[in-house]
Amino acid sequence: MKLLAVVVAAASTAACHSTAPPAGTAPDAPAGTADAAAPDGAQAPACVGLAPASGDTTWTLTSGGLPRVANVHVPPSYDPTRGMPVVFNFHGFTSDAVQEAVLTAMSPAADAEGYIVIYPYGTGTPLSWNAGACCGTATATNVDDIGFVKDLLALAEQRLCIDPARVYATGMSNGGFLSHRIGCELADTFAAIAPVAGVDGMPTCNPSRPVPVMEFHGTADPLVPYNGSSVLGFDSVPDTFTGWATRDGCTGAPVQTYAHGDATCMTYQGCDVTLCTIDGGGHTWPGGLPVPALGVTSTDISATDAMWTFFAAHHL
Image (cartoon, rainbow, N blue to C red; front, side, top):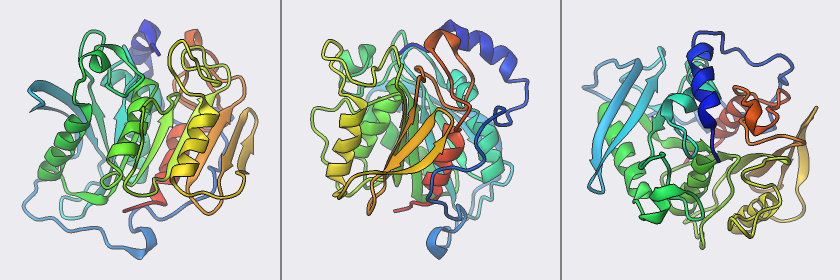
């Protein structure tokens, strides 16, 4: 699950370059679009007494007795009187929040679409999240990362005008595992999740409601194998997919909702569970910064753009 030092090196150059979608990225995302500003005609909640806060800041807080940190990106279109959607974007094992922002190019996407991005930091050396089967000292010492997420969201609600009905979670690798855990345990708070290169690592998962899920995974992932690993204790991607379908009460077989080049998305009808598979894809973020050491990065779908289309269609 390592994003390796190659991401650090790439970050120093990629951060200064264009963040437009890679050449060959498909223009259309999987089905399920909606107006992000007013889903289903709903009005964003109003706020008073908050100062404008666009740009990038770093927040610190204490949660579970530990000092915690998160980087926050607020787009120029932020209106301190009108609630804005929020995406929590969790980095992978051994990575960090700065690398995650570069890997996913989510901040420029947020500027274009109008949502806030929160990039939290894990704990330990190397940094990790407690997400059941994965990973590092966070799991070994049972760090309360769910408590941290709740505390961080509460801080965001104090400092920013956010829409509590439109809070979402994504993450890469160990961060993807944590996104699954958030779906299991914070379904009443997060409207949808979109893990990348991470499977459900929780021994039990009993969400309080059907959770919209969009997953991305490569068939040649060397660190979180597509077909699972009994040695690592990782479920397979298909089992994670069908697991969410069962919890959400999906019926019938999934149907193809997207196909372009090496990217294919399958969606259960009558519910909101989608798996986007990258044929030959590695432990990488589709459409994101290539990390050759971890395998092929698809340019046939942008996970960042596709998940936002998915997120924008769902709210509590």
